[in-house]
Amino acid sequence: MSDFDQELGLRLEAIRAQGLWRELRRVDSPQGARVQLGGREFINFSSNDYLGLANHPALREAAAHALERFGSGSGASRLICGSLAPHHELEDALAAFKDTEAALSFSSGYSAAVGTITALCGKDDIIVLDKLVHACIVDAARLSGAKLRIFAHNDLNDLEDILCWTQKTQSSKLKTQNSARRPGVLVVTESVFSMDGDQAPLREMVALKERFGAWLMVDEAHATGLLGADRRGLAEELGVAGQIEIQMGTLGKALGAAGGYICGSRRLIEFLVNRARSFIFSTAPVPGSAAAARAAVALVQSAAGESLRQTLWERVAQCAAIVSSAEGTPGSGTARSAILPAIIGDETNAVTLASALRERGLFIPAIRYPTVARGAARLRITVTAAHTTGDLAALADAWREVAAQHPEFTARTLS
Ligand SMILES: *Cc1c(COP(=O)(O)O)cnc(C)c1O
Image (cartoon, protein in one colour):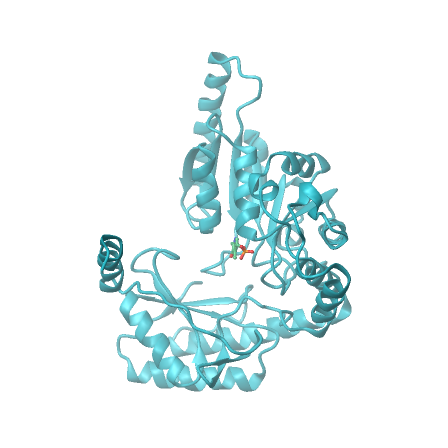
């Protein structure tokens, strides 16, 4: 064996010893409430396809039509010759949907975060992050070279203290340097948190960033298409969307396609086209994917989309009742996200429980470090509009059996 493989073997052993081993599971069916793995059908409680759009006829037709008309590849980056009509139609639809001046699509939510944050911030700036923001935001902030500050999850007092400090730091910098541009402070949070399903206090955060002259970027990955009267997300529901400088999201979750987006002012989008390296130096997304996302944007705004959303909230309430009754805590019935985590703690226990549920035909992943903190491993149950009440009943039965057989099962959901 080469030295290289030997070294990697040692590193892999260390990963395995910590209960953090990961491997791919091949799915032989379309994405949906039921999926085929290894020749067996599972009820899938792990996807982010919250409205069941990933295999929806409207998206499939739009993708197929774009494939026929524009081919399979986009040929170049957007700024060379890859800026095809479906990309522009998607961006117009996104700006209209989110009620912003303009929108820009990226090949993923990850690259939207990396491109945007590194374009906006550099070594003279300060980035302030919620402790639980997604890895793509953490990576982007580190890559930008800006000074980083983390506030405790959803803790407004901690955020206020940090903003107070940034104000002093930045104004002293202004006095000492003759910089051509004003050093900035960028606050970044998610609206609905990906691993806990709880919500950021966006109204109060907007008030704070305005008071301290900071900018706010909100990642609506798990709220787009689900929250707000017009399904734009939590910022709309709380009436603060117009005060958020950078609204980010993904096209790969409730919107059932793939890609990421940034919505905001025309100036912001022009700036990103000129400065976001993950946008500039990457081949444009394939036309079929942009067309599917655009069809999804239309669908979530339609009566059919509203009806899917109502079904989702019904399933969420049913699922919350199952999980909380298994834990002996009263069901709240007020869960406001399709993410219902059962916190297990120990990594190995979480994996054992996930495999016990899999034996009973349920696919629910054990989420471990580094996706969540060490010792905070969990079963992350996600519900979709495509689940039936029968699927939920099967979950209730399996959950009860597994809980009875595994005394180490001490899950408690987050409130
Ligand atoms: C999934 C996710 C992303 C990344 O989006 P992709 O389109 O999957 O790259 C970004 N932020 C949050 C909060 C997410 O959950």
